[in-house]
Image 1 (cartoon, rainbow, N blue to C red):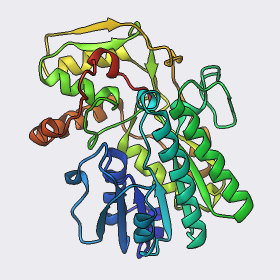
Image 2: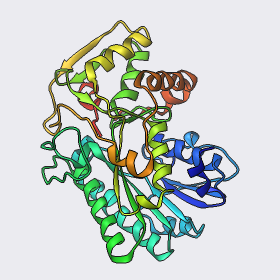
Image 3: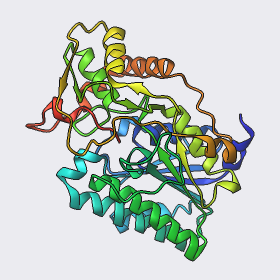
Length: 346
């Protein structure tokens, strides 16, 4: 076990959004690192109960971060570390439901910070979105010091709002906060659906022999980051003292073209249906996404270790092993068009 994981031995940890892909993998890692108790708070709006690890030191509470009764319930467990991963995800969803996006990502985050302050939490790690908050005018590779007001969806705005609230609680109340900016996470644990990411949706459709819809030319790139690497960055963010008050990109530092992604997935599952190009969405203003991880490498020793091809293989293996559950849980709303909904760049 890596030495920095020793900090979690005997600790009580709260993970909001702990049934999601990143959350469930984080919960397992914390439990295996020797945490005394890991409490999961998730309303299962975009995840399933079966995704939460069944371990003796893991407690699951079904509830919404806007529900103060549920917040009192989980903070009665006296967590010393809080990982706030719960969010109203993501760009298209926020366009369709902007008020809910503000309530969950804005008010929900504020309440988590307030309860963490009142209970003297020793570390608060906020899950931000590097794909969102840098805006369309940021130079590549994306670096933490760049700030932009040119945000194009409510989701992008509220993820930035969460960072600003975290900054306020750090400066005003000395709450030890860390902001981790995720980039195009993928891996075991993410169930496909109307508002989910491109990789699980592409795999889901390819395994059914369907055409993969690409919004744009296909030459667009994303910095796909394996969930295991993101979890490692989160654990480091909760361990190193020099992380407090900082923001970090958690990325792979590698660009992958969407058209290449589609070809790789089709080839891996022997899907002969191919792909099709559809009109790019108005809010999708970034033709390329590539992050710098220099700051995270320097301050917390973060090093993305998973090759994209390896991570994609692990994701495909998880899909095959859990296909019946995934097929039953995949959520595509009535009237939703796969060509419009498939590519979420959050």
